[in-house]
Amino acid sequence: MRRLRRNKTSPVSARRNLQSGQSMVLIGLMMIVFIAMLAVILDGGYAYVQRRNAQTAADAGAMAGARELCLTGDPDMAIAAAIDYAITRNRALEADVVVLDGEVKVTTRIPFATFFGSILGRPSITSSAIAAANCFAPSRAEGILPIAWHCPLDNILLDLYGNQYCDFQTYDGVGDPDISELYIIMNSRKVGEEDVPFCMLEGPVNCDLDGDGDEELLVGGDRSWLDLSGGGGGASELVDWIENGFPDEVNMHTWYAGQSGVANNIFQAIDTGTQFILPVFDAVSVGEPTSPQLHEGDTIVSTSGTWTNYFHVISFSIFVPTCVHATGGDSCELYDLYQGEGYLGPNDKTIEGYFVNGSVVGLGGQGELDAGAFTLYLTR
Image 1 (cartoon, one colour):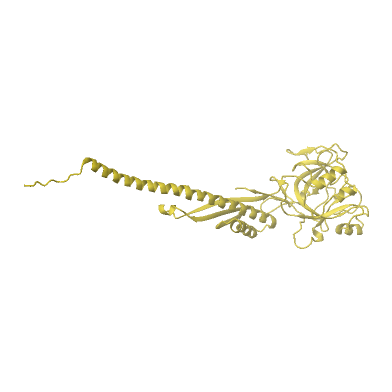
Image 2: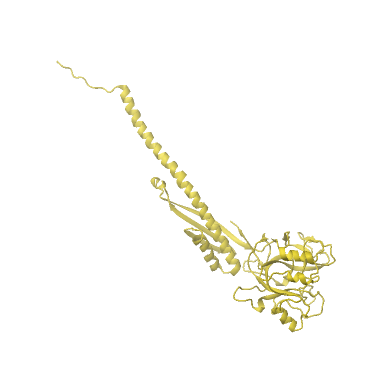
């Protein structure tokens, strides 16, 4: 009689099967962890790249929008410029622009499909960024032309945002400058000569510097050339500053003495058609300023020369000379007009041109008075 025997799994074999099943579970879990790590590394890394792209686009859009707002004062044009730079030029896929109180804020977004995130239920990610920018009147400048331009206190007004600006005419960039957009910023006559003065043909700029009811010309010979270094000045120094720019930084709330500048070669050194930074002054002191003209925070650059008038620099402007009338030089539009009316003589030298709104290399800081020149900064 045959006895049937039941096959039994050995303890060792059972243990092996159990371990094999556990290994499959562990491998499955490890695969999930591995995919999650790949998602973090690859998708996260790509998200970081796109985040930087979104920030670059937001920064560019905000700066472009702020610049357009400063140039035109038109919020719609600022929004259009911001979107153009954010999307068209810097490849953001979406952009929102808000203009408020002179600030342009841009929010950009770049959505993209993930590599491994879809396996984990995240098929796409959107990288976003925010930037804001504003334009400011500059508080400092380098490479300036050493000719002071006047903005009297009664010509300082407030714009829609409560910022101070100097009320004078700037060239609008359409066609050739109209005669009403031209200024003579320098004349070789000394202050005090009895002539009918001018600033501009229909000038909104008041030239009554001493408040006596009579306007004074902004002229050379202790009126508009500045002794920026305090060294006493001189023709060779002025020519060097005209051709190469004053090498040091000029700051607002600084008093500079005047100096003479009637030599022919000084005027002839002016390069017409070039944009120059001009310091703008709002007050004149006979001798070094003292209270009440001298305020806390003001700086005085004392001169070793003989000139006594000091000019308080409050801002900066951008001037483009169109014509220089010097001995044996060109005939100039405004010079011819005023010489023909008897206001200027045949030996007078003049520098005439127009002011523009804009920003150029050499300007910096955040000042107080808008005189056409501006700086751009990200505020967020």
